[in-house]
Image (cartoon, rainbow, N blue to C red):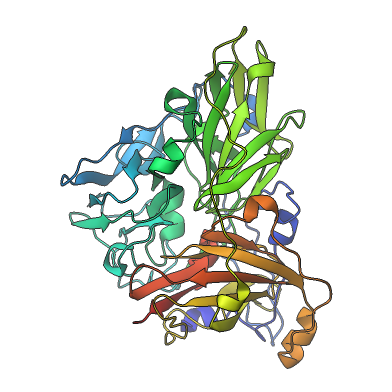
Length: 538
């Protein structure tokens, strides 16, 4: 722990957080920073010395559904030819009635171009850092990896969900500074899936993604292509984010109010964006469409539904197709998670329907009148997804999710299994082995826990007595184990670890040896040491 951060901690007490409300799907907005209370002689909490907040945009004054939904360019790599994608500063109009917003993007847009690859065909991408030398968002130099002796602007790219050699995974410390480039290879030896790429720089990942550094990576295979699912113009990405925008349409990233320690534990925006646009509209035909949905927000959970609770089908999750379609009327999606959805507009001709997050509209589908010939289909069986037998695991790890507060109950530090980033590696699974990782969530947040390299299945979730565990390190269950819901029963790489529950992943460590990471995908948490290395050994 950094000494300046230590002064904020008193007793290392666990603290409740906004995630408890998020777990219920409540729309959340980050409260504006308020000056911290001065404590008595036993409380060394720093007094806020800056709490000025710019005037924020009132999104209700903007006309909804006037901007067409942007669709990122698609890059289809050719064998033996590397793609070159630059990280650069750009501007983008997030709504017709707003001035262009300053962003950092892959290519020229937020989201960046969609990379579309085929299973078994390797792709090479040269990632070039063409960003300015100064960051335009507030860096906290007391956060691990963002110390003052590091360059302000750094970047490293991780393809989330990809099975790649460790050298190509985007390890958080393997960053590039402006003017540097690196070629990374993606073997794509895995099933078709909805993957995505994003910055993964230690200590400032939260800022770089907030600035706009993310994009989709779609992996296809022959089996998926044989199913007759909607495709071409009838298959689109929907990348969901939220941002705090000022009245003049610029990004605002909130700060703690303490000038030398601006980190905040969570960020929630006043506007929600789909493919980088505020309340866009998509004109559709009365037929089936396939939507690759990604939650790329820093901290917001989205509870998705169609207005009026009209049903839709979920056909896939993080690591590809489910065994069978799942009928949904709402879907709770955490940061880092993906969902492959099919919406049938055949009975909605001549109407308009909104995609909602709880009571808030995200976008509108405007359905053309009449009928069209739709040859697409959604088969009753999508693929074989055998459940991994619990008896196949050769090792079980019990790992805690920890959050520590200062003396006025403000979250100041997040850890995994009580360990800091620089502590020795404690998880060293053998290549080809199967393990069970049991996550004990001792906080009041729901944490989406992501492992690099691997895919896994959720075994179950079970409530336990957190107080007893804290007192004696004894797990006393308070209810029965709950199997994953049907839409979570496929292959995952990120899953929601609920407060007060033990969530068990069963994982086979396939692919490569080397050092990777596991972390919470709430980016403010990951940036304050809720990230740990693990090492796959021969």
